[in-house]
Image (cartoon, rainbow over all chains, first blue to last red; front, side, top):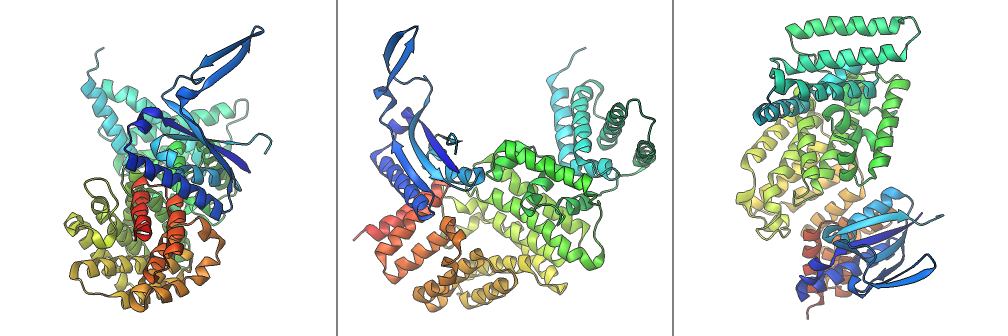
Length: 115
Length: 421
């Protein structure tokens, strides 16, 4: 089954990190991809730029609204996603627990639609 | 009516204490006849709710267990009566009511008979999927909720709850008896109970820092169960061995992290932080197990722990003995985990290249692709042979598979050492 691991992180936690901690975090993500690849579970991933760079678009009553900033005004913001291919939910949860974001923020996982 | 917080808090404390001590006893007692564990649990949880409403007002009863049993029994009978509206009271119901009446009369005079061990044997019955044994025991004997259990076993709470319900249905429908197996099948059946307890302990233990309360509690609960088994079956060597093994692991808990919360491997631990009392208890248990003349997996694992502690304390290298113990363990319970640990001991005796050679069979097992200790061991051995590129790659996989940030940082430091010139 295909699952998407959505990484939610607090931007404040991220910006408070020292350069060394950031390098360590980046290395941990790289290692996570390496482990996924070795296990044959890796499909793809994408990190996102800061939530402050976000733009939201919606059409309401026929009028297009474009706004600066992220859609949801929450402390934890979507920071990136991983797509993995694993046999079942339990396996997906194991990978989510290993994802560096799980110890820094939150990892939400969902099965891909129609997968 | 006035309630001061003291009464409320006292009632809750008493209820919590009874829950911990007696939950499984009460479930076993209530479900022994019908084998309907879920109904017994529901009745008992209603009884606990009544207790929390009643005790702060009227004071805690002198025999809280008997109080809970009486209330739970009444709920159980009510439920059954409602379900059978329109029918004549069946003989089964009659039996249940009579049995419970007679039993609770006895309870007033004496203790509730302890059938927790029989309940554990039912939960770890071979007819029930082995993967659910440990969660089922934690829920039915200790009263942990599905959410807590799911987090510890890295499963979805909804799926875990469903699996628990199904397992309880199986106990009822397949007619799995609440009984301690006869002498001839006892040791085989006990193995599944001990495996379930150890699985619960291992899930708790995987939170090395002890920072996750739910997980740390799980190691405590598992030790409680192991103690219970040794009390009820004092002459079962493997039960003693399992408790000795757990005490060894638990005794080093405080030493596994330094003041900054960083992971400290065994060889570098501050031995003053080891719990001496637990270590002594473990040794006594292991010696007693040894006199019973029935060697098994848990005694060997405890003996290995004992050997590691002895080496650290005396500085005398005993790696050859350790390899022999691992050989015996592998012969009894072959698994990639044992093979990996054995290889690390082999490295100390015959060098890293021989150890890597010893691990080639393990590498063929597809499970190791996701098994962190394999990659960490491989990385360490490769680093020792000077194969730095391969070592770095193996460290990287190990880092990616690790879910504890402190251990991840430890591995990252090792990884960096292989990159430095």
